[in-house]
Image (cartoon, rainbow, N blue to C red; front, side, top):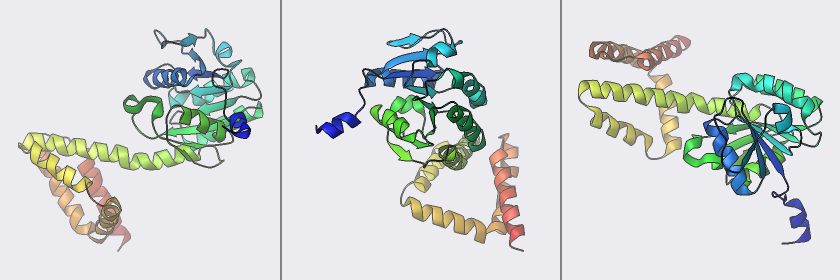
Length: 270
């Protein structure tokens, strides 16, 4: 390795990384950091224990005071509170990384609090279920501290997309993706429940799998174009779907919402 490359590569044996929040995701990221060679501290007043190789801090101040990198993996509702409490205790050369699913507006405010105290800030949007790939789950990173955050996540084995230097932009992209991923999951769940009630679960499973296969870009184009072009007819069809599901005793939140979406699109074209 060239000298310049060696200098640019962090000595993780000497780098101190703190994970705030030792729930399911926090534990997996702490384990990933231990495996990658960091000196790892964890803080969570409610977790019953900590992963092997992780030192448990008694207070938030103790957890972050000597950290080079701080990863927060808590509920999004706690992002601002934790940042406000941690900011005065952080080293000026530290990087504070928020991995919650807080809104872009909240993360922008967190960045202001952290950066006013001196450290760099990065927000991380985790793109996938962490229990499957652990700390190697793909991510998007944005903010002033994205270089360090990206190097850290890549050392865990993650593929990382650069979301730019504006804090909150990574979260914004994840929320856009969530419209699809969470909505798709809800629609599939409702369709399978209806299939079971109608005695056709395996048939509807096959239909779902067939629609999700093939040329993804072509499917997106076809679905968007068809939805707008046939909004009136499809609104009536989805009303019939909702009525049918009602007769089966199956909740039809997604079917009714889809009906209303088509009705709105039809009205916009009048």
